Amino acid sequence: MQVTETLNEGLKRGYNIVVTAAELDEKVNEKLIEAQPEIEMKGFRKGKVPMALLKKQFGQRLLGEAMQETIDGAMNKHFEDSGDRPALQPQVKMTNEDWKEGDDVHVEMSYEALPEIPEVDLKSVELEKLVVKADDAAVEEALQNLAETAQDFKARRKGSKAKEGDQVVIDFVGKVDGEAFEGGSAEDYPLVLGSNSFIPGFEDQLVGVKAEEVKDVTVTFPEEYGAEHLAGKEAVFICTIKEVKEPVAAEINDELAQKFGAEDLAALKAQIAERLEAEYAGASRAVMKRALLDALDEKVSFDLPPTLVEAEAKQIAHQLWHEENPEVTDHNHDEIEPTEEHNKLAERRVRLGLLLAELGQKAEVEVTDAEMTQAIMNQARQYPGQERQFFEFVQQNAQMQQQLRAPIFEDKVVDYVVELAKVTEKEVSKEELQKAIEALEEE
Image 1 (cartoon, helix red, strand yellow):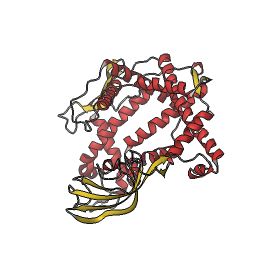
Image 2 (cartoon, rainbow, N blue to C red):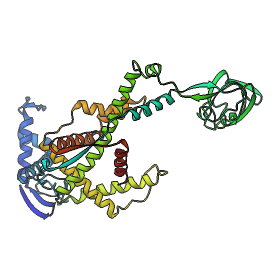
Image 3 (tube, rainbow, N blue to C red):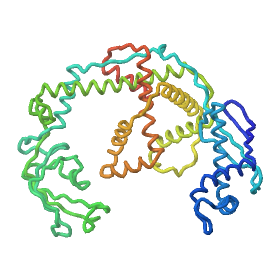
């Protein structure tokens, strides 16, 4: 076998590989010798079929396998000897298309090699960790929000008109063409105006009603309504208003705490403080991670595989275009050409991606089965009722597995680097932390 270099320019590599007919023949013979003991053929005992007959019977079929295995072996040996790691799957094509049995095989292989990643002194990286404490004011604000979600309703003063957000307690009878229909009646039904829980237009017509009033509400069922006999029909609901109630926040006491699974108000406050500080810590980590990536980006410089950068730039341009055109939900549009800004961002992402991969590999960072299972479970929650199908889909889809594994791996590498870096803590207010997060989102 002959391997001749044809291109060595930056990270681009090209080689011609020649596999001789004699090598192919030897490979076929090896396969036949290996299989011979198990082959049975009429007129011969098992394992005693002559090689010449075996070659005539199976040689043609084994030739293709031998060719593929020999070329794969040549590629693997090349990467082992050269130390090159291809950025993407190498492009391989046979150049003598008029090949026939007995000819040498000529193959052209090209790829872009991954660059040598320079060493980085991680202990020289300096980071600032923003620390926010959950003060009493933040806990009280969160308590007030909880009380509002657990709101109750109390009767308005007699004669008061119902407002948006009020609850009206009603009896109603619905009729189509003057006839009451099944499922169109109820008594003492508590309806919150503005909840959009009834047919469009129903709640709007009850704004301004008073207790003891009778109101006819005329609506049209949507064309896509679930009950076919009502779809698109006009209906009149005769509504008797029994009470008009205004929303009131629940009292902040032990009873409220128990509604949210806490033993008492003090325990609920402790839970809220813990949750708030976990949220602050998550936001702080995002700020520090960006600072870390900026620091690493400044410390390293190396050649990037052009194909990786180009693919990343196209993906960025495509994603941003869809964010700016949310009405387009498919991919039936003209190709989006990356701008210079897209290319710069792509270069940064590829450079940092390669660097983090190198750091993770050297530190032997691994994503565990338990972490992958948790990631799949988190993703599966987006498909209620179809969790099993989602699990099966991920198990059979290597690309999807990689999409779930990549961010976990990256976060673990970031944690590894942070442990080695010089990190100083700075206590700030939640408003200052929020400004830092907003600054990230604007970039």
